[in-house]
Image (tube, rainbow, N blue to C red):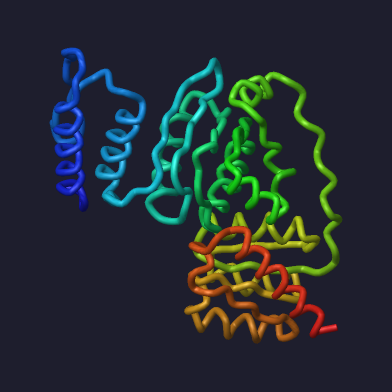
Length: 296
């Protein structure tokens, strides 16, 4: 039995008892995790709660303190996912990815409604950037709509509003799939300053790449130590950004120093992925600029 399944089943049972105790018309039951019956149909938020528990229990990563719930709806050839809570590194990002993997089997056109998202960390923002790239590579797209004030603040501070082109309503976002794509925003021309980013997390690398590209740098990323040295030799970067997942790999760091002796190393703090995305991004860009100014 997957790790966390017993805890998940216990929470399902408690939630079911609470739901059953509330006044409602008599309704049939369906089977969910481990044969536990739950009433159906259920209010949207209850359905989302059960689905969240079942999905995470089955993949062995259930966390009773989960801080993200999702509701999905198909609108023609578009799937709309309403997010509530926090999009952060860990179970929340894994849950979002699992749900999108399931929903995008037939369509690659996704709208994320973020009106009730209260917090996004660097890893969560990186996940959105990565999902955006994956869907576009598959011929689809990701559109954001009804951004909460916090999400607007994060996208403004990280200069990513022009990447996602957010919409004011679900209707506008859905209709945008059949309209002419928005004109690309003028992106700062990449300078001759090359930066290599290393980490084991695809989400973190996606965030670093878009953040630094939009700050005017030419950026290369890798999550494989075997490729890191070859990348350093081939690109001759001025700065190598080492994420938390790579900083402890002393052999790779030493080979980097030997292969690119003129490159400066910039180590990200251990909590970078779980830090507030806008502040972490701003701090990184400022550190990078200071490092390059000291080289001049």
